[in-house]
Image 1 (cartoon, rainbow, N blue to C red):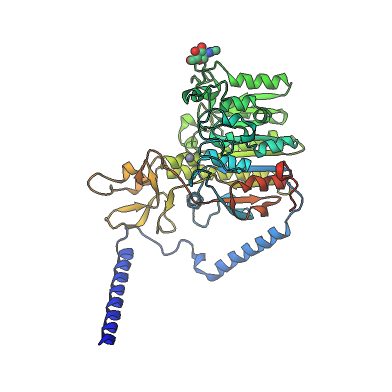
Image 2: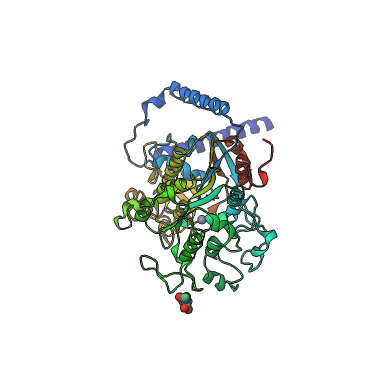
Length: 524
Ligand SMILES: *[C@@H]1O[C@H](CO)[C@@H](O)[C@H](O)[C@H]1NC(C)=O
Ligand SMILES: [Zn+2]
C-alpha cells in the first residue's frame, strides 16, 4: 500500500513540475513585443570556428603580455577614475557603442581585477571615503576626505591633526621630485579630486560658507578650495582642470560670465593662486573657456589652472546636443587630459596624473542611464588619448571606479536592440519593460501610478537622453551600489592589478610601480 502511495505521489509531483515548466515556457515565449527579429545579428557568430579563433587571439594576447612583463618601474602613473562606473555601466556602454561584442577602450588592457569599495562605517561607500582609499591607501568614514577613521564626519578639528591626515599618492610623487596634477568634469573641489590634496571631515566644505553653516570656524577648519590654493600639496600641483569657479570667489564677486561666488571671506582664490605662482617667477596660466585653453602655449606652461564652469562641467552628450552649451564653449574630458599631459610631460622625472570622469555618477543619480553611458564613452576616449600620448614601457595607466550604482541590465533584449530601449517581451502586467532600470531613484515617479501598477512606456521616450529610467523605490537620487568595481591596468607592473583586493591596495601597487612613497622599496 505504502509503495503504491509513494509511486502515486512521485507521478503527481512530476506532473505538476512539468505543468509549471510548460507555463513558464509559455510565459517566456508567448508574449513578445512585435518587432521583426532576425535570428542572429552577425552570420559569423553562427560558426564554431569564429569563437575558437577569438579564443586563440585571447591566448596569444595573454602570452604576449607575459613575455612583455617588465621589471623596470613606471616613470609616470596616470589614474583614471570613472565615478560610479559600475560593471553594468561598462557592459551597457559596449552596446551604446554598437554591440555586446564591442570593447570599451580600456577593456583591451592586459590586466583586470576587482576592488572592494566599502568604507569603515558603511557597506556602500561614497566618493569621499573611497577617494582616501584609492589615492591614500586608508579606509575611512563616509563623507570624509584625506583623513583616517579617527575623524568623524563634520568634526571641526580632527582633520587638522597631523596623525589623522592621510597623504595621497600625489604627495608621494611630489616628494620624489615628480610633478602631479588632476583633471575632472566635476568641480575641482568635489570629493574625488579633493582626495588628491585635501584633508577634511566633510566633503561639502568646498568653501568657507559651508564650514560656517555646520557650526565650525572657517579660520580654523580650512575649506577645500583654500586647501587647494594654500596648502602644501595643492600649491605644488602643476595642473588643475575642471569646474567650480563659485567656490573661489566671494559672494560679492562675479565670474567671467556673471555668476556670483559662494565665499564670504572676501577672497578671490583665483587671484591668490596666480599671485603665488608669479611670486615664484613661474609661468602660470588661468583659463576659464575652451577657447582660452586652445590659445595657451602648453609647452611653456609651468602651472595651469582651468575652471571651465561655475559648477560641474556639462554632461558630455549635452556638449554636442546643446548648441548654446556647445563644444566651442566647454572642453571635453579628452581635451583636458591632452592639455594636462602636455604640461606634465615637461618633467623629466615623471608625473602622477589623476583624471576623473565625474558625471557618469551624477547621471546615474538622476536615473539618466543614457547620459551616464555617453559620459562613460567619453571617459574611454580620454583614456585612449592618454595611452596614445604615452609610452607603454614607462607609463602605468590604471582605470577604475570608486563605487558601483544600482542600475541593472534586464533580460532578454535581442542583439540589435538599442540598450536604452525596451526589452523584447511583456511583463506579467501585460506592459513592456526597460532593458536598463534602477533599484531606486527619481525614476520611481515615472514608473508607477497610484492605483494601476506600472505606467505604460513607449520605446520612443526611453531612447531619449533626457528620459528618466524606471526605479523601484522612490528616492530623490539613486544610491550607489555595494558591489565590487573593476580595475584595468596597462604599462609597467600592470600585472599587480589582477585579482580581488581592497580598494586601499590600489595606491600601494601604483606607488610600488613608480618606486615612490611608503611602498617604494617593497620587493616585487
Ligand atoms: C564678501 O562677501 C560678504 C558676504 O556677502 C560681504 O559682507 C563682504 O563685504 C565681501 N567682501 C569683499 C572683500 O568683497
Ligand atoms: Zn555619487
